[in-house]
Image (cartoon, rainbow, N blue to C red; front, side, top):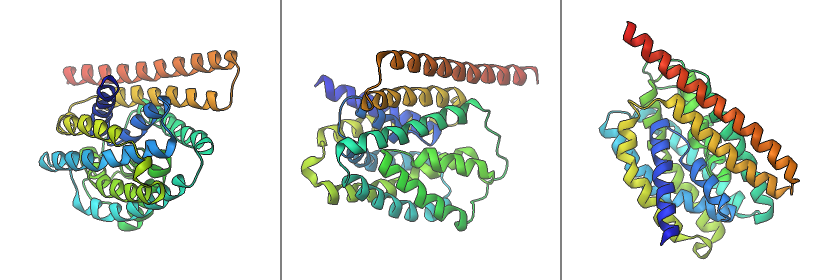
Length: 291
């Protein structure tokens, strides 16, 4: 019972982050489940099955708050589903020993990206126009493949790319990415069910993550308009880096001294990134009060 409650809290926290930033549900929950000893393919399968429910709830909430551009959803969801299905099939065929370092390394890269992405001040977007399909189709296919093989990555790949394009308001980028993830989660889940079979999927984990995520979805859709994303993004990025550095150090049987030095460097960088985010938010608020 205690384990299921903890898993539900992981799902709730991950969905709060994902619904507010447009990314990191899969990366956050997968990192924590891997750190708890769950096999890589089973972890990714459980997370994606839970995402079928959480992304549905999140999409409905974002739609009701006016955060969804349906042109973006239509253009990115189908290629994302294709990429996710093939990624799930590939991960299902790998052994646990070979998959764990691969997934941890990919999640580590995504965590570092989040840390850097939100330490640097996001540029305000002024235009509100859907990007062209020539940009969205390959982006969706790549993001879907990374999402399935890494246990997360749809948001960390798709959201920054759309924000960097500068043609869509941030709230609509986040809402559209979260809504289209439903199709990606369904495709990845089918790939894992075909590759693993239902017997290897921990459905108690799926249920716990689902309950926590669905409960957090409407709150996250509301928070997307008010939360200081720079601080939250830096904090979550650091958490992901720490958990996956731990997995990689264990996989390569690093010496205790290497563990200590690595954790010290990561902790220092994490604290600095969060401090930069906090200072930026405080500076913006002070400037707004003066204005």
